[in-house]
Length: 363
Image (cartoon, rainbow, N blue to C red):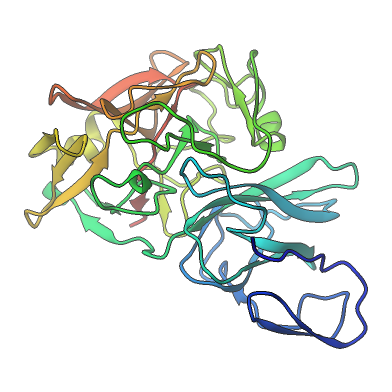
């Protein structure tokens, strides 16, 4: 277990050594400038930030990829952490020492670096969550892959995945209800529907909720509905408060420089659908790229709109696009593939389901 300490405690200028052998000089106990923090939002803001090594980091506390400030912030903390395995982290194993100051969120990743995922939130004086950000810790980072037919460029792994190697459960990544910016945990097994362990307390509600409710309750699965969203953003005439086709919205879950890809018959997967073969050994899809190599798509299954349970791990793969299906309000387009070898790049299904996301590079 890594040592967690409260940076809000008053310290006179002093030298403090933590158990990870990192030395920190507290010059001013009211400011997080006693050590160098890398600004991971310097190249742009997002709802997700990738971290590849231990260190001290900060990001601008704004809504997604926008300049919209968040008013009323009193503190920041970690909502949950997970390795994506059956073993739950101790608090601080993935990220720790979180605080908010002067419009920035500060946090640390201590040695030994642990690949995994975490969610950091800012709260008001009543403790209500105002916004949250996904911290994606992966020593591998991410790499770009060029798809055939000039369809586009995508990450080499699922959003939240800590590996791109077939046969590794770290390739599964996280799952998203369509249009929500915050992730849910997937399976920690390659063949059984066993939800990964984490810190924090997950919950569910059984009636449709607003986008604002979903933002304030990032650990609440909105279930028992084809469409989880009620109110503004719930129909196909207004997606300003969810994902958007053709551009990156402030609710897009992808890191800086990437977005949820467009789908449907003119989307990226439809354009690039050349040769894709079911891999029976590792349970997933080998998608042929422009240079003849393959991208790996694991059959991570999905979490159902009806209760949030996980199904079809190792048998089916479901990948959301940003494209709503305008003929039916509660449908959206996704890439689907099955153990039979069938691949459907422009299928549609209920937005209340939680599917994988593979981010496309913004061009």
